[in-house]
Image 1 (cartoon, rainbow, N blue to C red):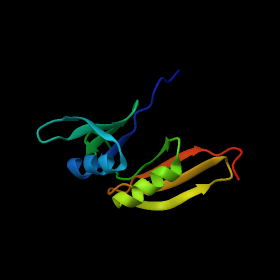
Image 2 (cartoon, one colour):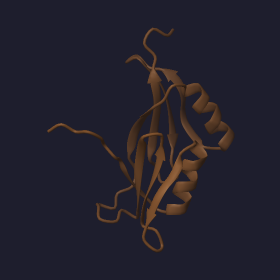
Image 3 (cartoon, rainbow, N blue to C red):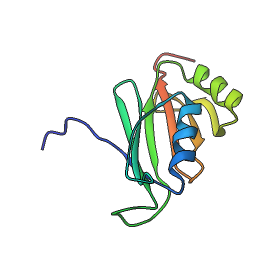
Length: 121
């Protein structure tokens, strides 16, 4: 198998609240499906995350984790603090060569936002 792309699907309890949370993070609403919406997507550049209301079609479990790679973790950190986003781990140089921070989505999903830190002190 040669994977071309991965699209994470997060179970959410409130579609509009989740889209608004991602918009505060700097993402854009991509699309919604259903009336009222039960499935949708948000995007940042070429990256997309699907949002699934109440685990539709899945196990119904909440929570999850994903890594999002950026150019400037510290700028994202300042933005998150200004927007009142729950930062659970501040920018930290990790021993595996990544400068990383964590934020928590209202439904418990953790987004690990990182950049390559090889060669940094």
